[in-house]
Image 1 (cartoon, rainbow, N blue to C red):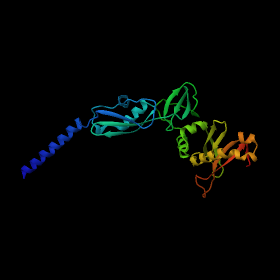
Image 2 (cartoon, rainbow, N blue to C red; image 1 turned 60 degrees about the vertical axis):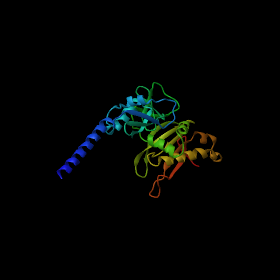
Image 3 (spheres, rainbow, N blue to C red; image 1 turned 180 degrees about the vertical axis):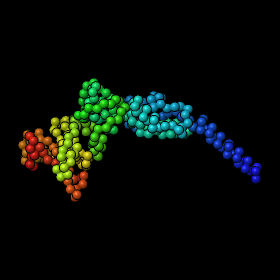
Image 4 (cartoon, rainbow, N blue to C red; image 1 turned 120 degrees about the vertical axis):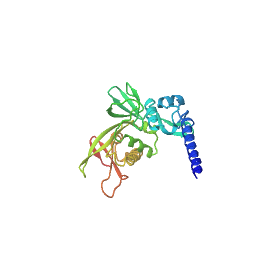
Length: 271
């Protein structure tokens, strides 16, 4: 009986030693690969990605801090988004990457910065850049930082939910500003988005934190049909009126239920 226990103990010890040995030899980081999920004119080299991420070659692959590697990489290369890091046994890390695209332009004390849809700072500029949506705020940030700006992530999501692309949004919207309006029923202030279109028309999305995608859908519908009102309104009113979009208030209404009206020279236009 003692002999059987001794044999069993020896087998366990051998297994443990084998596992530990393999862990410190076979299962160590020896190689990095990259998988770029978006098309790009830029070339990304695995060795550079590994260096910027701070990969510790020879380290036990089971104890790699992937979150730290992602943070390091995204700070070093602001235009890269690291979707995840895959462990390919026994000794390879695969970085699944996407290239970020600028969408917003925001002023800083030193100039301007571009942001993507995740509000990550991509690049600094000394002068204002065209082709991006200008957000009339002043922030302090450097490339690689993530910033907080109300409703901007939701605005980009609302664009996509309306089956519009980034390029279509950039072609339509020129500037975003914030405004507050008073909810006359509940007597509370609500944050809205004032959109200036590239055509020059101004649009006010009231209470933009509620049903923003539906308000944007209403805007697209209004813009496609506003010229059908030519028989009721003058060309001057149609061309120069503001579009206001708000949600109906009441227990019978949901965030889908919104309406629009026009404002011309400070007065509501009857349609």
